[in-house]
Length: 370
Figure 1 (cartoon, rainbow, N blue to C red):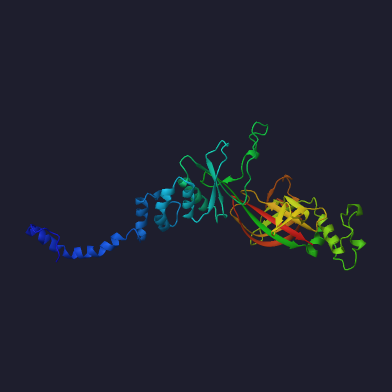
Figure 2 (cartoon, rainbow, N blue to C red):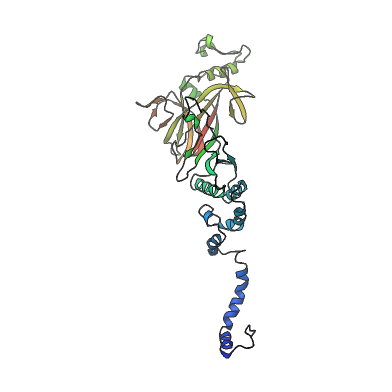
């Protein structure tokens, strides 16, 4: 047996070494494992390695501790820089641009994240994003806000009577235990061609013309109010007349669950005739549209507010026209609960799959054709 004892060793030392001979063989086999323990660590070693590398502060926010062990040291070297924020967010598969506040703001040392995509959920994603960002920012910097899809900036009204008004606040809402505010937006686009049953129920149906002109029997309007081009063909005249009927009408977007029960109603903010335009105000399906009294289609838009029916899942959407508000419901109320609106005619019923969230304003766009 090989020995590491010096030649001057006594009988006791030699006997002790021989008694542990088998154990030395076992330890010899473990030497390679000790050497490679940090390169290919066992799952039970990961928390201890994170503590040894000084990464324990990130463990509450990073679910994949293996990636944290391999890349965490590089993050530590970049910590306190914008590159450190980018590296830290990569641990939780988030890509975002860090935007510092304008130097003239009172909170000049704050930053916001402009996310590249909407987080899949509010919990635990937002807590992780905030935690990693705060640990990665320079010491004097504060994380103020996260934004995607809906970003309303504050209006500067200093030294004016409106100083301190709500317009000086940026969009967003606090969520859970996070101290930052979150301003997210999501768009759902729908298309619908008005059916005869829907048009008849509304009192807005003109039989598609089969001759060179519309029938006088279908002219349910004053001729002086007809905004028709003399060169328009009968089919175009029909679409224009039916689109004009919607001008000034109150409409509500109704959101329903999969079983048909009503989640709530959101008042439509836009309902008007429109025409394609290269510099239009509205976008739908990749095209731009401008309001047009002689338009041949109707653009309808509604946008939920932060906190409208959070944690609900909308599976059906339609438009309610000529509905009646319940007694005591103010006319200006934008979100109506189930039961606060009755009657009316439902059109454009469409299946959707939209999880309503407290931090997301959902925009619904409907292009109605005839």
